[in-house]
Length: 492
Image (cartoon, rainbow, N blue to C red; front, side):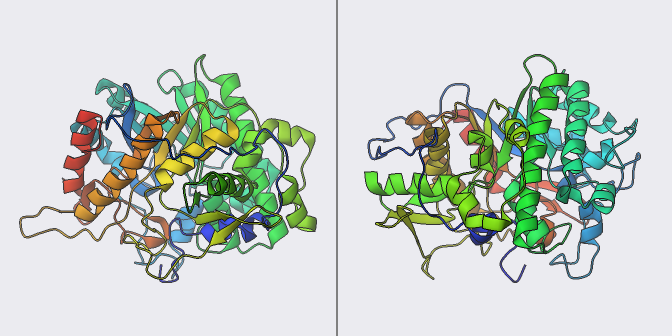
């Protein structure tokens, strides 16, 4: 969008004011920061660990289409996308990539890459058109077929339960995530899906990107449902999303088959040390913990930090001890979406122990005003998670870039800018894994060009170019790059 807040550009919102946080102080906790410098982490072998899982990612609303078929109910994005002026190119996702009908073709695209995993999302309104109540008998039929197709081709399914397509009925009836009843409804839906699909799905992600769905959907009017809540109400929405995650973890454990694994997928606010010195590394860890205090720190520590509550004051969310217990239900892995650096951090002689540096006007950008080219984020973000919270299993659940993809005279798309971005970021990921950071897999965003929320169809992130008039998929040069990388299990 022209205001530069499209897709994931909300670092300033997510990192401070929308969290109700003015970063001050540091308390003793299991999240105590490390004083170790990373300068000793060097790359001697370009390969990733044996068994590293390479995949690609999509989400239901962005690719499926078929919004009125087989009993699917409307979602908040169906309504939002049809409001004039909300989508940059006036498009919508009524058809999108038509993957509801072309899913077999898309599985073959994955197979052609050599991918061994696929992260997709399940549309809540397909399963429960009213959000609660009776399940739609045809609701999971599509995902049954998709799973069978994936497994027949040796591709492991990773299912996301909520990628922003809240049933409109819950928004109308309860105010969506403004209500704790939506948290409970999400848990019921998650338990139902786990009971039905955990015979073939062993990894479930609960909620994708709490930071964006709260800040842009309920705070800035830029995403569905398009609200502009005051800070106190916004903090309560964030708490309710965290509660929904925790209750869903419990429901999946109760109803899923033995061995079912579960965790969140979050775009944690990324705080990068300006210099690789012990002081700046420590400062970046402090900043990471505090700037994620409203959600990820809460999930992993089971409490709000003192600094967060003090900063929020009377706007702090209302919660109980039972809430905190549910929210901090043990997870099996952490999914992290990594695109860019939100902050560069230096050590400072102040109460917080750090300062955030401004971005110079000349800082390089990809083909989106928020997407600063900062490959080192791919090293520091998972490293911070492992050091701060002792996370033992991490997946990079999204990483990629928009690019100004144009078809050449021969019909091909030579997206060398995307290849440059991926090569640079993945070298930093290899640096992390070679240094012992427990990243076990990577999902590139995205398999195919799709409906990019408020950007509509204008911004292209796919390895495969989609002609939205014919829905034809064509591999870009980056697809060849990724295929070779997977084949070698090394950055090429």
